[in-house]
Length: 134
Image (cartoon, rainbow, N blue to C red; front, side, top):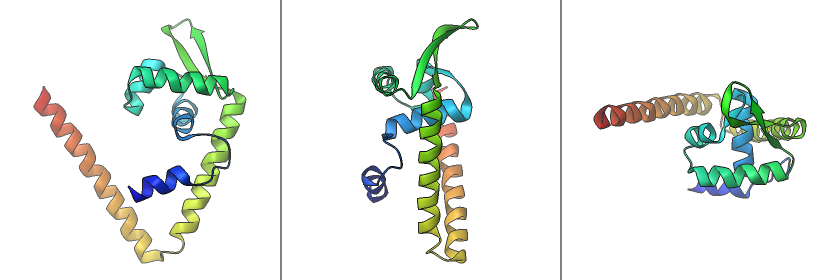
């Protein structure tokens, strides 16, 4: 909770809100997506994604377009969206590096190992849940 609160109240290098950042992360780093694909990857309801995409389109960060190989419209970042995403990503990374640098090498190594183990445990729990549901 504390980490989430700090992230939400932290300053932004751009005017990107958290939802726009997550959408831009997907379409910049992983290519265009349908609204359904965005909803699945971000684990959000379709109506939430529709609202967030509409807001990001209004800000000029993403655009929807037709693609001959897709029956649904796709979402991609505009040049302004790519630039805003890159600036925000860099600012976030620099902020994390600054904080982590105060921990010392041993604590950083322990943190990295712990986070890796935590992510593995989450993945295993999700896989086990899917197997139980099948």
